[in-house]
Amino acid sequence: MGFKQAVSDSSLFTRGNGNDFIALLVYVDDVILASPNLSQVQQIKSHLDKVFHIKDLGPLKFFLGLEIGRNSKGICMSQRKYTLELLEETGFLQCKPVKTPMVTSVKFSRHIGNKLEDATQYRKLLGKLLYLTITRPDISYAIQQLSQFLDCPTDIHLQAAHRVLRYLKAALGQGLFFSAASSLQLKGFTNSDWAACPDTRRSITGFCFFLDTTLVSWKSKKQVTISRSSSEVEYRALAATACELQWLIYVLQDLGIIVNSPAILYCDSKLAIAIAENPVFHERTKHIEIDCHLVREKLQQQVLKLLHVDTSNQLADVFTKPHAPTTLHNFISKLGLHNMYTPACGGGGVSTDSSSAATPDPTHQN
Image (cartoon, rainbow, N blue to C red; front, top):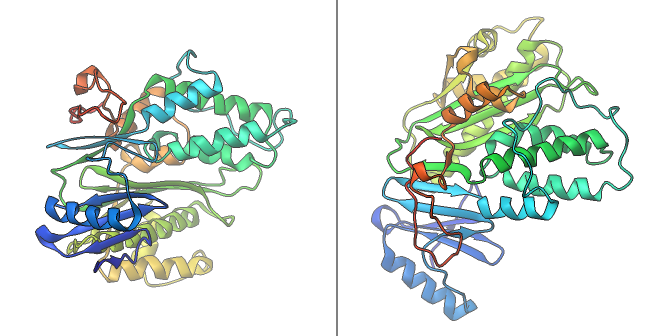
């Protein structure tokens, strides 16, 4: 039918441009179609139905456990029904909520607690929580930490996973809001936590990207090598963030959007910024030369622009360490997460039934 497979994502197919642009996203036998031209959408659905006998579910409301609410101001995406089912399955539907997914004073290790006789329950729970991070970036760091112990979980790790469930109970409908008024300016935050893992002394990389004010990408991950200094850690995080930025640019290009201005990348390490801008390698940086070349190349190509940000405004910090309730909720509000089921959002009566036409107002920031 003339579709072209995207370079950035093999599941994405696009065709045309302008008002005739259409995107088709496929996952096994589930398909999403998006286009400003509804007659094109209907034509493609008719063709697919002749070949595969598809079931047309109408306007997008549910997709692979994701719930979508839409109006003229934007799109809200959450996993409330999925979360409720998870809480019911694990027996935490009537639990007492907590304000944070992790306790700030705890450092997880392989050597704390008593090893579980059967790790199946823990592994299943972590797998389901991992899927929940699609719309809940606020639990990304906690899940990243707990995922390190899938081979040998202890009762302490299981208790920590149960705390995440209690945190989810506090805001079941929390999710992402994609504003229809967002500009096409990419902004990113990158941060790290040096030698955070007590078992391996490896560091944590955290980053997040916004399309104007809309959160579109984030990650919390342990680095693959041990770093000898905090500046090296920051720079490795910067390199990983630069790679993600390049991928996001490819995604936008596949969607017919050309990014003309450099993305702004905020980093709270002046030394890492100096290394990126300084072409001279010396004793302290020669072992990270490859990463230096990567980031510097993106700087010279004007793909990105580095700016320093104060640690208190470093939004990627929420992906590198646990936080107290006040700090965590401050970060959540800045990340733009919304709970579209709260009455303040106009969603107090939103139904989870796919036949419901209710679309809550997602503009209130929770």
